[in-house]
Amino acid sequence: MSVKEAAAKIKSMETRGALKIAVAAAKALEQEIMDGASYDSLLASGDILRDARPTAVSLPNAINYVLHLAQEHEHDDPAVARPMLLADVSDYISRLETSKEKVAEIGSGLVEDGDVILTICNSDTVVSVLKRAHKQGKRFSVYACETRPRLQGHITARALQAAGVDVTLIVDSAAYYTAKSKGVKKVMVGADTVYGSGEVINKIGTSQVALIAKTLGLPVLVCTESIKLSPYSLQGDSVEIEERDSSEVAELPGIRIFNPAFDITRAEDITTIITEYGLTTPAEISKLIEEKFAWALK
Ligand code: RUB
Image (cartoon, rainbow, N blue to C red; front, side, top):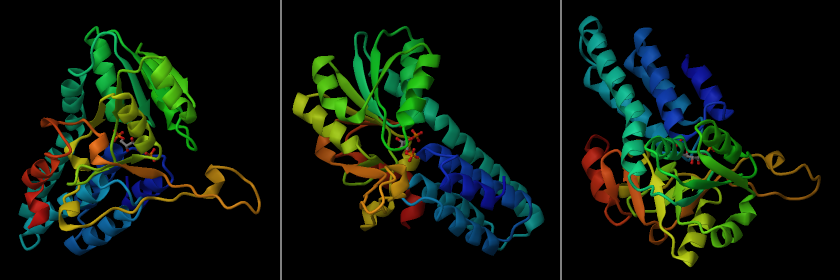
């Protein structure tokens, strides 16, 4: 797929979810390299892809890593350098794709028989964790917040139902009542960006669900591949919280509508962060970022 097509699909949310947009961007750049693009034109393509959506750091992380690989070969003979670069990029894309399965393997270990799990939005990573736990024979049920205004909770509910997981859809405002009355035992959410401070940016409403969990003394587990960790946050940078069109919420002429697509969950409201490297905590996450993103922090 071309860079312009990939960027358009990310912008329109046909391609969505923090891991999928990262993989789509890396694949679009891989295609450009195959087509013989110069380093300068790869930089321009990186800008187009980076601008497609602002909040998930997985997108700039993937783009910047491919550009970092390309820069290493910038002055080499293309006939020799291009196959080497393509091999590195393809290896990187496979690692991105397999990181989800590793999180699923590790995360499924935290799902117990009898669990009642609350989730929000549609995180492929969370769905993979739950599907893996179900395959292991664990008996648990899931409540999925519908996730206004785009209703990504429907995607989660359908995916879990298709996999045979016991799932119930609820409206977002039923989260506290459901957690209390249905005996929710843990909250499991995905991530778009994880800061070195341990704060987690995910779909709007995640921070409310985490506050509910805190009030009820429930653990909040964040399932995230390391591509969603922000090295730039260690340098003081923050991501922009995407604000989407008011028409997603309602068509009410003359009424002002605020439609933020993501929010920031406080580090103190998160119990565990599950990555492909294992279990960690908000307090420890900056160490993992420093270790895995040395190339970006130079
Ligand atoms: C998606 C969202 C997901 C994360 C993680 O928001 O907030 O929880 O991106 O997803 P949107 P995944 O629908 O606006 O893209 O685990 O699939 O990477």
